[in-house]
Image: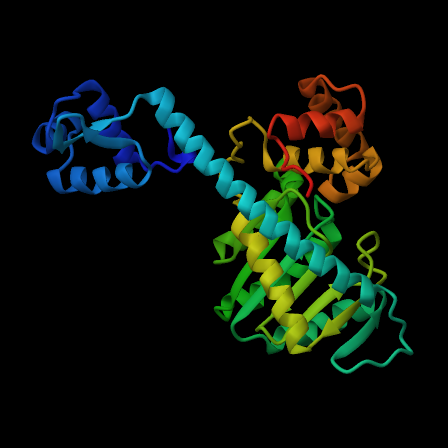
Amino acid sequence: MLTALGLDSAAETVYRAMLRHPAAGVADLATAAGVPEEDVRDALDTLSELALVRPAAGDAGRLRAVSPDIGMEILMARQQAQLAAQQERLEASRAAAAQLISEYAELRPATSHPGVEQLVGLDQIRDRLAVLTREVTEEFLAFAPGGPQTAENMAASRPLNQDLLERRVRMRTLYLDSVRSHRPTVEHATWLAGLGGQVRTVPSLPTRMILMDRRIAMISVSSDDTAAGAVVLTGQGTLTLLYALFETTWESAQPLGEAVPVDPHGLTAQQTAALRLLAEGHTDEAIAKRLGVSHRTARRIASELMDRLDARSRFEAGVRAVQRGWLPARR
């Protein structure tokens, strides 16, 4: 029950046993919890690290469990600090990536830059991707924004994906949280996972991106129209930045087969992302594009968040969210 707060099942079992039997020693706790004494000692180490147990007053050799009201506050504060730090790292990476992507968005076919290949139109993108995919030997990573994937895109990518996975190439794909309610995309992702691919979801992604063997990146030049064109990048400095962005985003993502967690305020990552966009003054249409949802869904999410915050405007919602600790204060 408390795994979402960072407490594994064994430690939780021992913690509950200590609350029921305050004077119990290791042997008695093992009996009460129904686990070996060695596991009890490991659990006590974990609980000690989390500050959920303390030396008993007048008996330094015995540990006692802190009360649940204090213990849960400790766990939630710890998790909130971790989430805030992770979100800060993610936002910094996204900002750097957005700056990089914007520089290449203005490229034209006649422009020549070392380490940059310009592709115009969906046919050129697919043809070049097919060639590059055949050369991949180790790793294939992808951002797949835009929400639910079209049947055409999934059908076009399936032979390439199958070839990669059959060659034991490590494949990791990031979709938007909004695909969880789109059965065809979920079925496609399940098919990928069945062949050995890994799939996770996040609230938002900056643009469509593919990284191959840490030597090549393909990025759409327009996040609004990913079929319009793309650039193939091979510069080492650029690839280092893009791989850092992918890994940071992957760490914060949730496996597709698992339920979306909520933070201590009861918000999903998608709701938090929507709230941040809302506070920044984005329209429902802009929020819908970033989250990969319909305009109607974006409007509903915004309305629900404003109702929960008892806010009458987007600015007021942002202020109240910061006051309640739902969003970090702007620096």
